Length: 361
Image 1 (cartoon, rainbow, N blue to C red):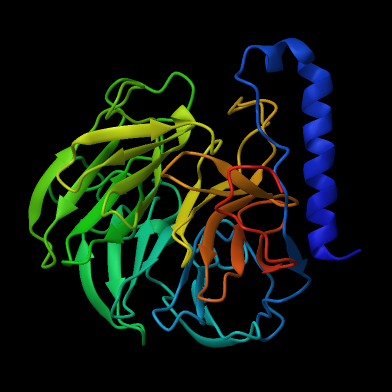
Image 2 (tube, one colour):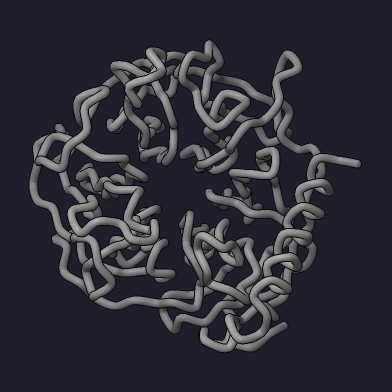
């Protein structure tokens, strides 16, 4: 049985088991999930080929090179951590799924979010610091690292191995994105989605200038507008708004680039990853619905596509639990699978369905 089929079977079994455990009453307490959208894609079996017999670990993030063709992805070193590993966690794939560049060995404990800027530089967050027991984790984590396309470290935001919530420190940073003018936005705080998270849990967006100078921050733990329970993903939409995947609150929040709240959407399910395709649509990865620790029952995991203009979801790519998502210039969709073995899955369009349509196809 292929790895992709094993993952699909594991996901289906887990969802059925949880539904039987909780019964229908848990689902009735939620707004009606929308799982009936078409999937005009097919998964390309075994597209991403790792070198030298290497196998996938957790694959938390994926992005597209400025050339629109090459794909960058994170692999947590064949496991769910890179602590003590000599493997490169940052991988660049060509259009045939072959690794053409890799780097980053020894820099990260828990590479989490990845962003490739307009100049091809690669930004990666490290969301786990020292734990006091594993010396391999010492001196790393709680940072955002900017690397050149060849792997040279160009900038480090935060102090490796030191957690905090000050202007130049982080506590489990989840994601990073840069604006057209070079300003940097960091989504900081991974623990807010946990049940009974203490009120001092970090949950904020931090903004820096292109040279790393602190500008402002906003947000705190909570569920009101401008509050977060794990700001897990970031993207800037075609209108220049910052879109935050507020995963613990099962919603997207939109802000202007000064941090002023604009609006929110909940119909894109529980967002783990966000990407805007060349068609201007938003693609949102859900890796966590239908799990006991997270609730959000009745929502099928996968990748939802739609428009932020009217909030209509027009497609659902199911079959895996991607934490990261990216769309290349040809419209192919890539899902970075975080569990059940890990994987990087390419989805090719089967038909030229109009994903801007407000009606199910």
